[in-house]
Image (cartoon, rainbow, N blue to C red; front, side):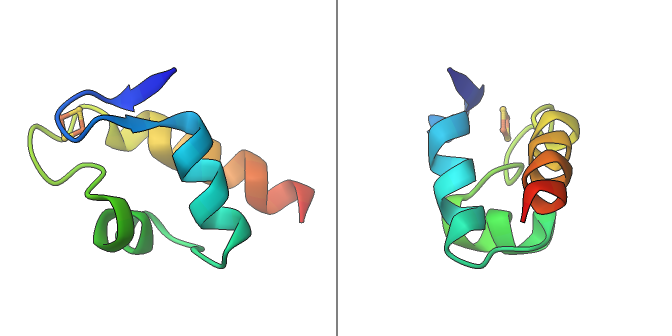
Length: 56
Ligand code: FES
C-alpha cells in the first residue's frame, strides 16, 4: 500500500528502511523522501515507525 503518494513510497519500503536502521521520520525522509512534498503522509509514516520500533 502506498503511504506517500508524492514519492510513491509503500509501507513495505518504510518497514524495510526501519529494519535497516532508520529510527526517525527525519531519517525516513532522508532515505525515501517520505513527507518531502505535501506532508500528508507524515502522520501515517510516523505511526508505522512507532509500530516497527516497538517490535524491535
Ligand atoms: Fe508524502 Fe505527499 S504524500 S509528501
